[in-house]
Length: 465
Ligand code: UD1
Ligand code: CA
Image 1 (cartoon, rainbow, N blue to C red):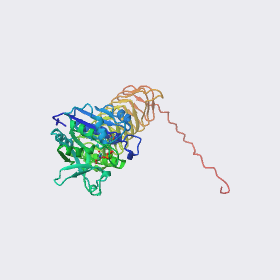
Image 2: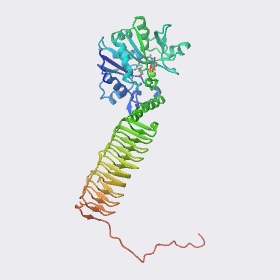
Image 3: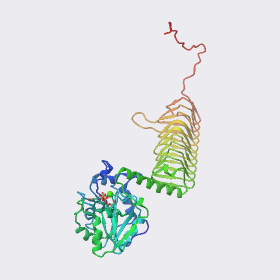
Image 4: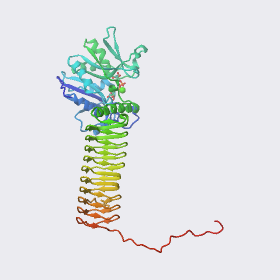
């Protein structure tokens, strides 16, 4: 986001909890939403605020978290024992400048947007405490925001410590807040753990702020789904749906037709040119770039691909790390594997697998073939059942097929081998020597005709047995 903040903002992300309810061996914050660990999404959002520092408090599974997100530009803080959210924030404060503003985020609340956080930072910059709240029909489990007769916030009460009347309050604490660093440091140093859970509650600083005459400004989350956390896999699935709805909405606003937006999943980044059409059960992974008028049929998985204008991917195809030109026709049931480049107007039909190969302009492999480690020129026809035998059991070898060559059906091309431009290979051949340009190679055994041949007859069995 290009809205740089004026003072220095430090973000503290809490991610030390165990997440028992995930029933997982993996730390909770490494569970993914739309293909990426929740924590890495939160780190990204923090980064959009252009903060001076991002500190992530880790504890349970700390090593796994650090190892998974090694590339992240953050400072890791270890909280050895999880004594509460207040204690966790306190662990991350040392060394942060007093004049800084601290924003507290959560590793398991991955969908909050930078736009929503900015007002909180502004509040803290003005010397007050900014609290992100949310109104929930079912507030169970959340801390409740308590207000006095003038509607001023007086404190937050955790559900487990709340009276029956207090539990009826539907204005809830999201946990996300921003405060001037010096004040936060002072309040946290005075925190006690005399409560039902015996924890140092971050939320207790609200009452301290009130006592100190520091203003408290609440910011209502524009949409409850944005501030929801994942405590168990059911909530994780709900977050996934929420984010998917956001991502596919972006595709549609960008000019793509989704025949059913609920049945397209984006686990990465997809960009589309005008008038793409995407059928149901399509999964995008990694970075996918679609040109204009690209059509993707039902049940396709497309990862890290660039697909040119007007190309059609028919149903049930799997494409991985490939570049496809314009006006190609792929599938149904084709598999395009990494390092494949198809020029314009290439046709790849059913049960064709292509790996680490280039196919030139207008070439066709329409049925039942394997093309691996090959350079195929333009205007080549690869007949049904053609196999490039690229592997000798130890090494991979290349096959080169020149422009305009015609490979008859059921040909085995034993690499390394080259078929020259304009050459023809007769159906059923096993080609192990280079074929010169324009020549015909046939390795088929000569056909014999036995005119007086008789088919075997069933032996007669007596007594009906
Ligand atoms: C907290 C808030 C509650 C709010 C709710 C929103 C407190 C005391 N309560 O409750 O008001 O409605 O979040 O979801 O803050 N964590 C640590 N170290 C710890 C304890 C927690 O890193 O010692 C992390 C957890 O990994 C988690 C987050 O802090 O990501 C929140 O902790 P959790 O125990 O889930 O707090 P809640 O009881 O949900
Ligand atoms: Ca929680």
